[in-house]
Length: 231
Ligand code: B12
Image (cartoon, rainbow, N blue to C red; front, side, top):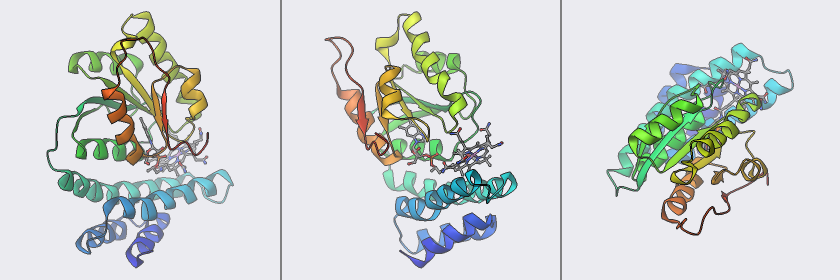
């Protein structure tokens, strides 16, 4: 792996914001592929921090510093992904957000950037988004896809509530609801009758492309599951 990616990995783990930002910029100047840098330098570091936090080897202040360093580095890499993607064809509108109670937005931001770079119009509602906000925005923006991110187990029930609310409003068939984030599994996606799941942001592009092109005239279809590591 590139030396710069290793350096970014270390800087994120150490929570060194300035270093992480400079290394991310240097990786772009060196012509490294931004997604590869994100996976090796940021996502891998965040996974390690998550494991250490769970095992009691790292604590919340360290997690926060690492999260801040990751966010800063990610911003420049996301800008590069967007720039490389250009305008692209209009693939449809996606409303994205992090479920109520959850403030983790690094993964959601990555999904947003990659979808935009691939021609989707993405309306980003940010973090801690209520069910009604998702639905009202999707109606107003004439979106076809509602993308729900969550990293904490306690926010999972809001994904179920979103689908039940669409059902109760009798507008379920108008939207393809897709799910992602750590505690989300294909089983959960099936159980709450969502329309799709992908394990990573890059797989989400294929997921959305398949969903916007599928014909639902015959009624509800099985969810599309892509890259399900935890299946
Ligand atoms: C960074 C971090 C933080 C930062 C968040 C900074 C930020 N701006 O996001 C801070 C320090 C603030 C934080 C706080 C907390 N955290 Co935290 N955090 C993490 C950590 C280490 C990394 C998350 C991350 O950014 N990963 C990198 C990104 C790129 O990956 P990702 O989010 O998984 O996204 C990818 C895919 O999931 C997918 N994806 C994501 N969203 C979507 C959406 C769709 C539609 C699709 C298709 C795909 C998709 O695509 C992405 C890219 O491929 C994780 C551990 C981990 N390994 O996940 C814990 C973790 C998520 N946190 C955890 C906890 C417990 C907390 C706190 C409750 C701690 C506390 N006691 O206060 C608080 C919660 C605050 C809140 N209300 O949200 C637990 C959650 C356990 C659980 N299952 O409920 C974890 C798993 C740590 C652990 N192992 O215990 N955290």
